[in-house]
Length: 448
Ligand SMILES: [Zn+2]
Image (cartoon, rainbow, N blue to C red; front, top):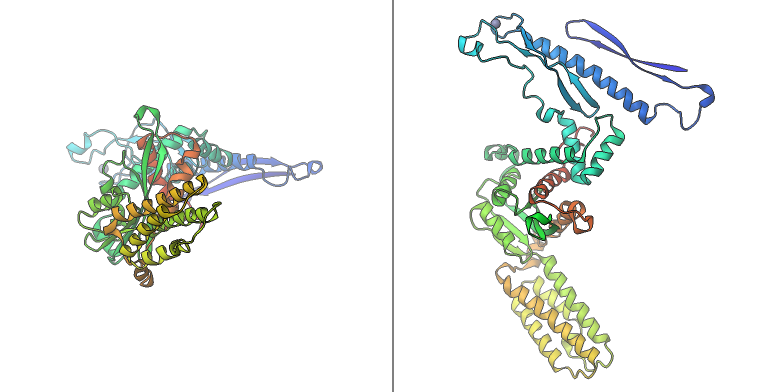
């Protein structure tokens, strides 16, 4: 059989145009799984032709409509028609893109200002918004090369270069940075409410020419009672990291006044970044998860010690030190926890460690205890009654930021990917990836 595919366009002025855009042949004796219905290549060819037809008609009609002078209603003269290439998801299309002369009815100053294209400024990057968003989204999810390959595999668009994907993502990232969130807008979207900022950092490899081994990616989440927003930034590249973070806070409904709580690990640079963004004091809480991990390390070291050959005598504290420590820290009894840590270390010294194995194991316990002790001492001001917060439904852990480290940092840019980044390139991917994960880019929105 033979299938003919026609497109019929009816313009707003009533004129109709009909064209054949393709023909498929399916012979009865070739019937099988390799020839059933539309195949990807057929579909791509048809889509490309369909797009070409629709775009040409649409541009033609839009241009005609804009030829009329706003002042006197006469047709304006065409100055020149260089044509223009437009990239769409369904193919690269050369369209007529004439420039029109100014009408003589306009004041002399305007009339002499030269020809003007009525469609100017509608297509940044000479591409449709949809194609740009898809390139940015895939570029944020996969390597640029892989993104280019994926788009080309399914779409009849023009040949994709990894550099094009990279550049498009870059421009989208820059646009996201300029995204218009004024404080006035924020007020109408969500009532101002206290915000919690979860922060964490990741390291990614830096390209050799920047004389650094690593770049620091700051990732996190801004949460208000019913919304959350991810962010990512590279300290070395963001023009002003604090300003970018302030932008994210405002986008999340922050009114510039209400209380901001920061939950992060002991790295002082992170809460300081938020302080600069807020331009005032913030409440910093040491992340419970990071404390709990250090307690876990002690627990493992103590277990190692108990199982060592020749271990005798069981000072009371060695029985369940981790549970005891956790309980006190959870309830904000820091001094008691600190005392327990000191006593544990003294107990380790008093052990009759006859074998080398035992000595090593005791040394490990001591080191882990000292670790946690210094950690607590360095962050004393950021320790709270976690149990009390938790019972009141408040967050105690930046485990949500941990998720962001993986989502924004590691999955796309982590050390295992064996990629090296420039500060600016990493910044752009981090910003776009955060937007993609929040579904702020709007690629998948319309499908719903
Ligand atoms: Zn006119």
